[in-house]
Image: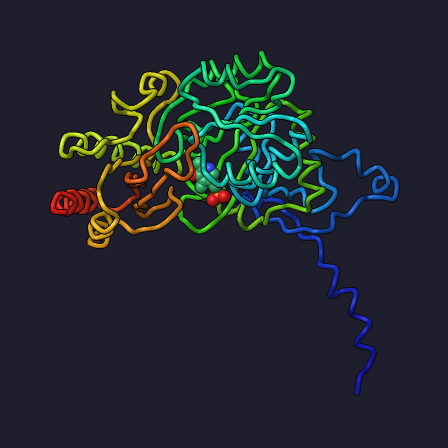
Length: 393
Ligand SMILES: *Cc1c(COP(=O)(O)O)cnc(C)c1O
């Protein structure tokens, strides 16, 4: 038997309007949407006029993403920010949106290595020429810039794993004079410790996966800028690719941001303290911008407000077996990629194959150390054990 139950079908698919009066929640709601509804046919026909900021389809973001983008803008003194699915996507999409066949791209030799692979392989096939340069030597940049043909210069400060700080204002002046945009990966510092747009950078990319997310459970990236025309181009490129982000990831990033100030102050203080202690207690080079002998230390004092929690120990001529034995005895640190979460992480990196200009020995292992929120004595006991084990090799 079935008695006209279809009569209530409409009630099932149209929820009642619920007043929000008096609902002053502190939390940013998770707004989900593919379809956005228009008030009338004319509004639908003119929907293109809503881009690049307004809402016309869920792919370009809901108010949850816009809130995160607005918060990143505020931290960076920016005009616009765009959230994308990962830090790597922030960089690759920026490069694809800006560069075209026949143009020239200069990438600092010490950037996140997958960026170099992307440029050589994907951009190379599109007829875009990539060259690497040493961002600590202005003469090297000057010699490689091709005025009118170099469209983009890409840097990361401090450099991945080897931790050199570069002179962003000087690199900006040289790049602008040659007619190139300057992009900067600011993942290590976040907007709390460095604001590259204030130093002359045109486009900032960050992996929100790291300190903004802060709990090793999301992948997200951001493109942050002031130039509205560039912003339009990058949004249009993302829309053509069909790339958008889930409001759940944005919600977790918004939650992570709430504690980012406290977390960064803590891990920054401990990373500096451990860098000094390691430098006193071992013969291997400690690479941390807070140390006077680190490349760009005075630039770091000038342009940064402090340290985050990542630095490196450079082990020259220590065998892989000895390194692995030392790491396998760690009790509190875990071994793995990525960083910026609550757990302290160590990764043994051999960077020689990733470097074309700033060479590294193939007998050199860099231990990349990311400080988390565990008890400081437990962490130091691990590092002391590691140093003893390395000396016993
Ligand atoms: C992790 C990282 C990236 C890539 O971020 P994902 O979200 O993992 O793709 C880019 N740049 C730097 C400096 C990073 O540390």
